[in-house]
Image (tube, one colour):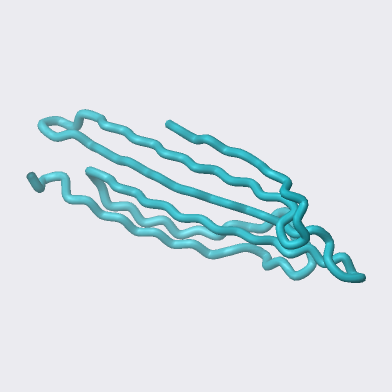
Length: 107
């Protein structure tokens, strides 16, 4: 697994703090006459502004991308991620769903 991460504080009004993470994971396992191969690449960035205006409003940003390749299986995932540190204006959480299928018998 490869997972560099970092944090910067540029001190700008619109971007006071920035946290980034890049990760890559690869596996290659034997499975009878075949091999199970999987690779996952993802990038995430989170940022926040300085307190703005007379009310001290802080803007929060988030972005992410990912790619996943797999050599075997069919998976479905459904879940709900709760926001444990809610701030005014934040949602309670997010519903997520994923489904992936790979045919191990193709050559």
